[in-house]
Length: 357
Image (cartoon, rainbow, N blue to C red):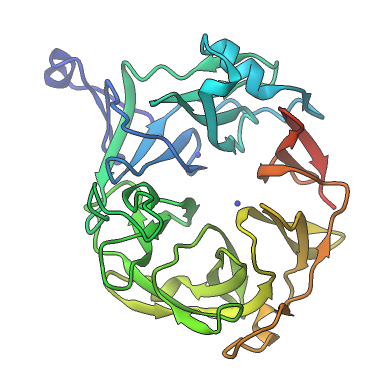
């Protein structure tokens, strides 16, 4: 896993102006947290704010086409980001990154201590903080989010998993995460320009490694792909089932049963995922916490039998581990031939473009 505005005199008098059709208003943006990022229409960056259970659309104004900087090789990007924020690397956490597909500038969501910030790395290598003091944006609150004080069995905040991943597909923002419903695993579909958010769809899957149906584990990462000539989400969960979910079924309040087409190994958390084409064939590239970077064939996913019984280890769609790609924490498509990867190497975090395998 892209509206400009005109202003009437009355709005100008209020020092705020809206983008026609998008509901964007220029004013100070207050963020309670920052998490997943995704680009949509040109220049529009979607930001997940789980703490406030909301989705924000930001007009970055970043719409100048750029073919990119060629290869990127930035050692110690965590140190550079910390320096730009006037702090030390141990005081920041990089939550997500997204490549602007028009400008090729790279955006980061970062927690500086408890303060959420957005940063831009331009193709010249300069890091700047995205000023939120007066920025055109729109916010939509997500109904049925977990309560602010809700905890899971390990004592972790459920609210902070309201949004675990984002994706923009054909005029809609798809949001994976948790709800406060009995079947807590959820996928939301929000039209853009924003309309009031409806209830989430509840997602049930069969988890072969656990040998049972599950309804409370959130999707960790997803991407969109056409399966059997119909648009789907390819969703990955912890321990690591890969599931196909038809977009047509993601309607408000619907209970959806995903189709598990692979078990990719337990004791593992999928981190990020993209789909790409190489030599005329489609592939899935998935970064994982403990099982490296996997390359899976994406052709004819409908031909794999649904997994509906316990699985000892791996089953379904085969994969190849790309041995030379180690420590990958985040990835995104950079261009048709390369992916951008955030990689841990010892105590350093490095940012580089890598040829699509």
